[in-house]
Length: 96
Image 1: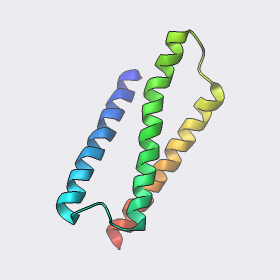
Image 2: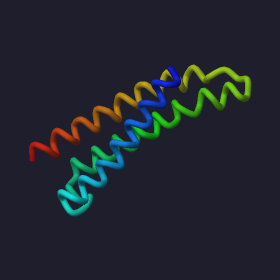
Image 3: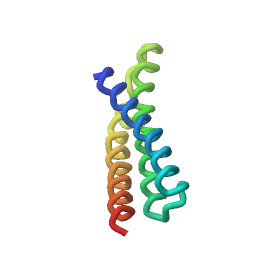
């Protein structure tokens, strides 16, 4: 499971790096409108959740503590909400 989480983190970071390069090369910058900014907000939230999911269990294991069940219940909802923002932002940006 940890290996899959690391692969997900690497994939998201790779998408961020290539996305910046593509936006600057094709559009000359990142100012592509409100929908694109909403997409970036969702992508930032998703990246934050993935980074946290990659580091939090290891930190708790080193301390010998159990994971916070309330936090672990909220994280998937936050990740799904961020993904919805990303997909809506992409749909609006590419169809406008």
